[in-house]
Image 1: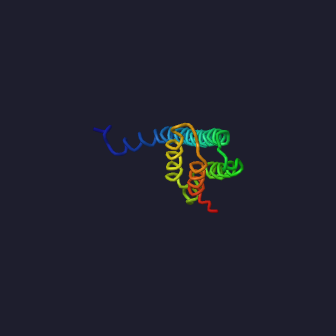
Image 2 (image 1 turned 90 degrees about the vertical axis):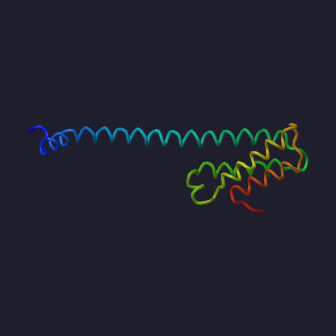
Length: 134
């Protein structure tokens, strides 16, 4: 009966408290490292995808679309993506509009040829996604 007294339980918890707090600290540090690693990888993945799409679009750009306009648009999008998550929180980038532009690009490029109207529409959609207006 002496073993189940409240004083005995308190002493047992107090003995384990440094171990528990140490384990929680190690877990917190591990989770923070994992968070920053994921954040970095997501940013790099977005940057890589934007670069690939930009290069392909410049190569396939039809007459009536300036390569500099494509580059400027993708630079704006990449700048907004690089400042994630703050650009999303502040409303600088709308990820739904980025997804809509990507869906439009996939649908417009089904026949593997771009028209100048399709490219200009996609660029307008991407500029709208990052809040840029001409």
